[in-house]
Image 1 (cartoon, helix red, strand yellow):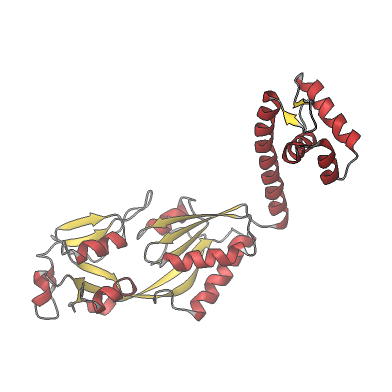
Image 2: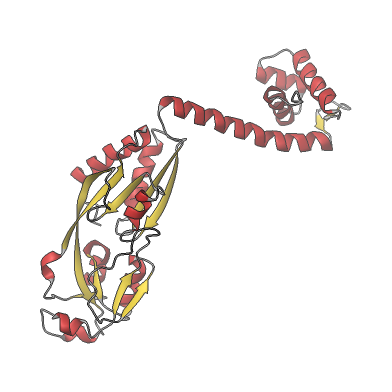
Length: 304
């Protein structure tokens, strides 16, 4: 069946409605007025409706014309989106890039990077998610992300991913000033620490086995959704544990948290990476890889 609508006619309808005049629409579209009139007449004949009330000097839409305009504008927006997508595919720019960010990463620095990216590819849709612990690797393996920022450790067996160093983050063992461990002599032993409740951030993995970090056998644990809530729980004295130093530096300097040395202090520095599937070759991902490398060289991601 031959379509009764075409995008050209919808464009003409839209311009007439905006300008309230067939003549003004002809001027904007660089066409003769008779061509505009003919286009609308053919559209009315095809649909079997009257689109404009032709009484008076201004072009006024009928109820049917207004309904077609509303639907037509949606179609025009959709067609523009399709054109952009096709052009991006042809030029190598992805229509969407999914980025998973570990919650250890200061999000304002990720957003700053996104702002720079939009100056190069404003039409590429960035889809950001937040992950905890092994959730970053899980996002890659499951295909939920094209790029992850803030990965720790080695990935699951099988390979297929490329990683790039982002920086090092330092963890410190902190307690609230009113917590019993605040007054204990250092270094704190594991036997002493396990007597008190730990606060743990829940691993956000969906397919891979979830991870736990620095929890002692037999220790009571309060599990919270992410590091920000873990920090709040420790400030309130609900429990103890390790937190990224950059995240609690102001809490330490202002007395809301106290750093305590433990007998396991030897492994306080952890390397973090950005990782992506090796087969992904899009220009948007290439842009982020390049700029993440520059950021790693020029700034400390984990400084204030």
